Image (tube, rainbow, N blue to C red; front, side):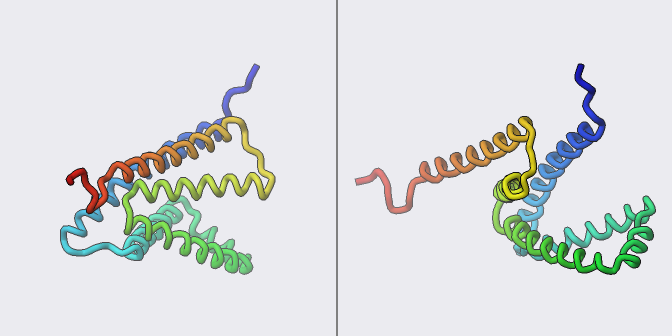
Length: 175
């Protein structure tokens, strides 16, 4: 008989679903914020979004780490392992560069484009990990990758069809 699903798997599924819900909420809020900003005559720039998002992420992470008691132990760990700062700085630079592209997409395109870009990046990361590092993926994992790729391809096809259906200026049915 099969063993029941480990609690970590169930918790992982909950986190994935929560992430999807938050992506949907965030996309709606970003669209609303852009519309309100444009009505007031201010077009938000990518670094406006990046600054405010990271400021509130910092404050939230600080408060949570303080509440659960990880702030002092984390700082202590860093103080007795000073070599970690090189890794932290490199990670921060890579993160900032990646965020620059994401926030540029948010500021200049609609949330659906941003979602497509981030999903494509995640799929690419998974595939690179599999092919370059030799990591394994279960049958269910492959089904998930194929489902995500199918969704992206369907969205691209839909946009292409919509573009082709639009009449081009100067071209009409009149004689």
